[in-house]
Length: 198
Image (cartoon, rainbow, N blue to C red):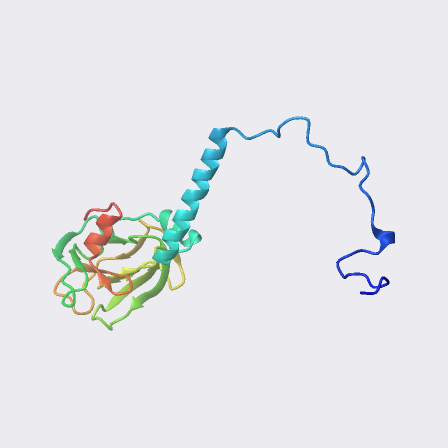
């Protein structure tokens, strides 16, 4: 190789500097301060717990905001003055019939947005209220006499939404209460899972 050619990795002679004492890095006078062991352990445990929770929620199909929203939802008996007159039978009777006199108050079982309020008869309800619940389920309240909410209203658990009636295909005054998640589920079990016994 000719002497005028420089290897690519070498710098030209005028750009190379020798290390001077002021450029040398000296070690700090003592060890760096370290966080207390307990603090590091708590931080590590918290980070591990948050990571594990995120993985579990991802596997369950929920994001952290959805999980927080679901955790903050409360539940209520849709008709505390009613008595159970017919139970849930999958594919035969997809809800609970809760009997009471006409005009007995009906309450939202959980918070959500009203999607139907008034005449609705695909299931023989006559008049109904449907609520897309904040927990992802859909609640149906059928055979109602009057409704106290409008489509688009956001209701909270325990808020009165309607009164018991005998509209549609009903043999007497009662509330027909269904929960869909997205298919019909036993409303009694669903309520019990959320601390409400009817």
